[in-house]
Length: 285
Image 1 (tube, helix red, strand yellow):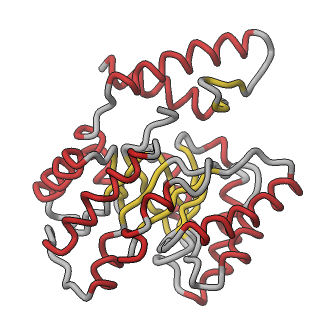
Image 2 (cartoon, rainbow, N blue to C red):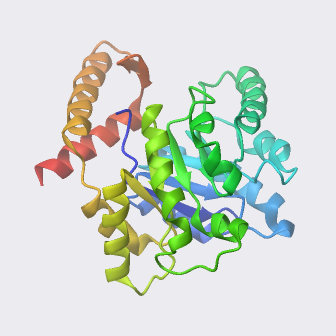
Image 3 (cartoon, rainbow, N blue to C red):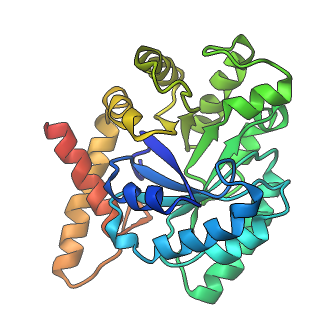
């Protein structure tokens, strides 16, 4: 298990106050958003604000991802050109329909990373259509950069012509299929957001259902949901063993004057060490 993915919270990229507040959040992943929460006229402003936020990367305890616009939007080239820089850990790609879309984005990333001498940036595709659900296995296995898959229930229901309810019958098959396909290729699955911020009981029940289906965590739209989700998606034995290994390896590496090192063939650095320490502290509590 390379990291914790109990919670991924979307933060509107065009809101400086929210970007600043995200420094205090305990979500496992902070995801600056360039897509649904940002109107078209604000996209350029959001890119610039995210660029500036990434310069203060050390002030964020969580991993930092950016949700770019969808493959069909025509905006990905502009998004990546602006936000790929030191400080970004990964990218969430919304509305992915097939593996070809992943490959195209990966080629752009390779050029930008080479130019800026960056380590490979992680990818999290979001499945939000009938085509995407059908192709989940090939999408999840399209790149070694992929560490998780997100289920986007609202756009999926819209694609299917089904009205949203809190437990939509029409989404049950898709919701169950995604973690199975993800597990088959060794990546995590993150469940869809819970929209009703006032329905805490509903959120708890929805988390329990997601966990029972094989999801390791949930996407979030409000900080108040973090603690509830973390409590339900508590780390398991495998994750704790990974955390102990990361702490031991990284501490030995730093004593030798080195920073980044590897665990089980995967690169780790300070952010992974902090995450591992937090995980062990959580387990001890």
